[in-house]
Length: 82
Picture 1 (tube, rainbow, N blue to C red):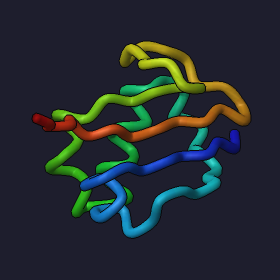
Picture 2 (picture 1 turned 60 degrees about the vertical axis):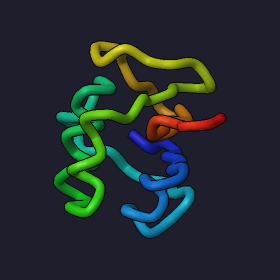
Picture 3 (picture 1 turned 180 degrees about the vertical axis):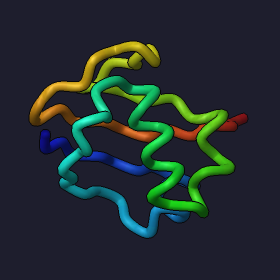
């Protein structure tokens, strides 16, 4: 299944790119599985994954949410502001 993954802020730095098209392995069908897979794929990103939010098609996604072909998934680290 092919999806687009967008990386923002520290996630972008750790992944080394802002956006990519990826073919997910067959065993990656839910958001929580995507997070695990990304941690294995990008070891520098792994330490950040405990505190990121994942958005699926511009809506925050729960861990058990199912990923579909052509979804756009965003990796969003926490944001601090003032």
